[in-house]
Length: 358
Ligand code: PEP
Ligand code: MN
Image (cartoon, rainbow, N blue to C red):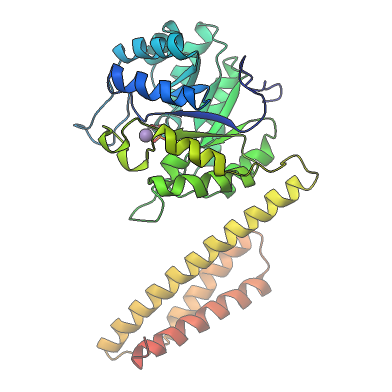
């Protein structure tokens, strides 16, 4: 992906960050036009609205479909804003382009599906489309799958490509709706420095309070733009109500953000350091999880009056981990030290359990 073109839109300052805002879904003509007018009054130049909504389960609001495209046309006529919507099939691409939608984005569930990505790419190639296309990360934390999706579009002739970081699914309840795993978009940046990356704090956070801090974090990491969900009545939204803000609040948030100079010579170093910070956090989380399980084992052993250390088990653990670790290019001395330290801490925690200290 060598000759990517920047996403430059007439009348939109090429100064970053690029801001895209609008409701999760187009619901009614009135909601679309009212939200768009307010956003335009606050100076937003690119309006987003989902027309076709991929839902995890049937029965949810699946979008208004093609009639919503007429509302997006009106948004353009009445406010002069550019419009953006999500496409997932050949029919979506054809209909959106025929209706004059300016920017297409690919949703996270679609990026994860190479057949769908190829179908979209083929359609764009057949139509000789020259629109900017933004590819959300796949729901699963798979950088190669994300890059693969981008490459399919690149091979179809799309040069105004961008990536949207919207976080990654995990099982269970967490602070974030989708874990940011910042090191993944950062690695994408290091691999393709010419590819703009836009952060979607709405889908990462899943709650409106997290939009501001996530947006600031993204800007600090040198992201090129933000795509934020904004609705004229967030609490009445038919999808993603908890994570939407009014245009007024969005305007307030945008004014609180500090845009730093990301073009310093130390940028790559700081990106790498941020990667290290993120990975260290993950390491700590994984270690804490392991200790929790160890304490659970401690409780079991206590109930069944078993001894804390079982030598055969310990030897098995060491042997298997050393083998895997060596395949991952780590020295046996280092691995032994780390594994021993982890084992010692696990034993200490189990002894605490036996003695009712936790
Ligand atoms: C959306 O942008 O409304 C959307 C459906 O996002 P994602 O594909 O990131 O879930
Ligand atoms: Mn949404």
